[in-house]
Image (cartoon, rainbow, N blue to C red; front, side, top):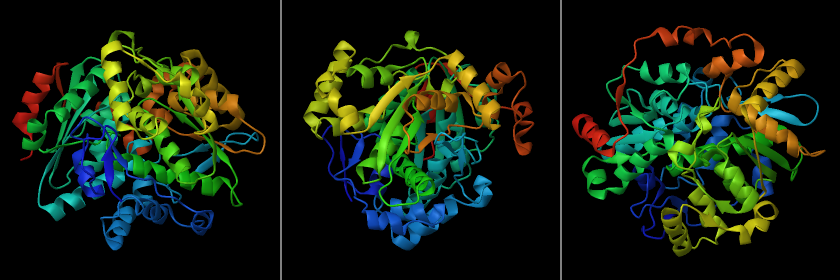
Length: 470
């Protein structure tokens, strides 16, 4: 399996190369030259596998340059009951009797779905760096959950330092405490005075400076890193295997969406042959992606028009992973992708409404948006009807999922995080805060270590130069 860039300017590389590369040298994103296919017979043979062994089967289709015995050891180290506090790793919980279920992706150490990919990345980064005898400086941006998941997966790992940018004052108190309370020498938190999109722009600018990237061995842990997408593909297969009992049965997935990486993994799984009926994209008030799937026009918003909402991890107006889907949508034509992103830079939008009929008929995508009042009402109704407490992002997913339920087709909502990470909103909805797990009860009282700085590429660059692992 080799990988190419969505913009056509990268020689085909192996999995381990793009793992360390992050953003492609031409500014594009790595994609497989062709997607592997999983037959119905193979899919049925995976029933009964543990999550770790299912992860091995799926990831072995993408990481063909890692010996099988080594890859199996990495997946078994990443997905353990001790790390995820659950024998299932990803439990499936019914939400009533209408076919709606919750795919529990938040059992990991940071209580968010990002742990599902990050725990594997922590293992595979250390493995590849040791094999190559080199170091890596991870530079990323987070709107809330990616940062803590990456830091918990990479803390103390040999050969890796992490520089994580976050928007100052725009995450929940619990999210800030999870990240900023880490005292490991290889973890560096940077809070920039701006929004997530501006922090992400700094990360992309540094990755695009090839001399700086090479000198300081910069890598990525955001979902621009293909390994994140590949690891997330696993739980779509897991969810399907848990929700069905016969070959070929269709399942729909509802996905709270900000940076488009999570639902892109569902698109990849569907393209590999998983029987997925619909991919239901759910946004909050920052509904740029919902607008695209409704109109065919992609129109990201500037920072001042990006709302701060009660589902803050989705407060994103420029979705990094969207380029990968557009690459597929335009027939894997890198010249057209380059032209579209040039148009985006020049005019602030591009129009693919001529392809709109394919969004659902060919790719299974439908979309919807949710508001603060929707979130509160959904949190209340789910709790009153089922006794299950959901966080505000997952509530966005449930609200939109309800609009697309079909008889006989299980609808799996991908859980984003545990409610304790957003206790203020839970208290507003139910009149009482969400209780964090016992081992995290005092998290917000721990000392915090963070560098607050202006949202400036130069300032972040200077900090990396002073602290990079070389």
